Image 1 (tube, rainbow, N blue to C red):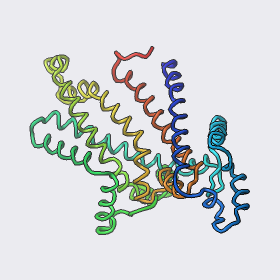
Image 2: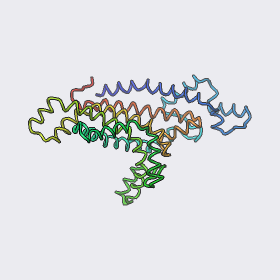
Image 3: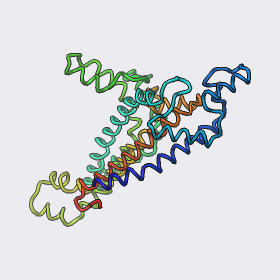
Image 4: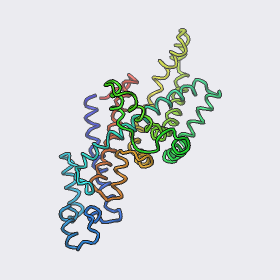
Length: 328
């Protein structure tokens, strides 16, 4: 297992280097002069712009800039934001909790709804529950997340006024801890109320996909001989379904869930903009408009690293679900 983890870590290096190169090139083909945006010297003399470009390191050839960028990445330095004049690491760490909070709630919501929906659909195959589950699954996978987010804002925020339309109600962990420290439940309710609409919009596509994968896996497993043997021994049907069948049907679900968890960081870019959520996605969108190269690269590397980490964790979970899987 240790050697497998080390190999996955080494395999991640080319991926991260490729992402850094791709983002480096794409950020520099965006129209606009980053020197003007960073300094605000729109009517400055050309000599002033040249001195600013030299100070920012933007006057050197692109290969030299990229080599310098890679050298700083090795040291853990993502650079300094041209707009905020702060280290990019600090900006990302400030926004990371909000993104993890939204992604975590959406992930739990997708599993909490998708897996039971798929199990019910498989057990009640051909019945009204199965057709209802299929309808919900197809609908969830077909509706774009940003469109669903706008629809939820229109209905539940603007028309009904049940939930806020934008911003963050405060860190969820701090709000939960406030209950134990005597701060009352009000901060937790405020934090959860801001999370409801964006987390539903972000989780909806995964609910349908996880439900379909769970249903397919359960239908394959329910016809196996060991399931028939468990029923013939008189085991309760609930035990047969959830203890024997579901565990063996979860491997494809784990794969899809891991891919979705990695995509949450990328998908959150659009929804964080729709709901004005102060996460890494919104930071990246603003950085693109401001030609803030360091922030764009740092946000992209963070998303890529999340993908790599989640995929490695999924591979390690296979052995826990299926003892026949071993890593040499």
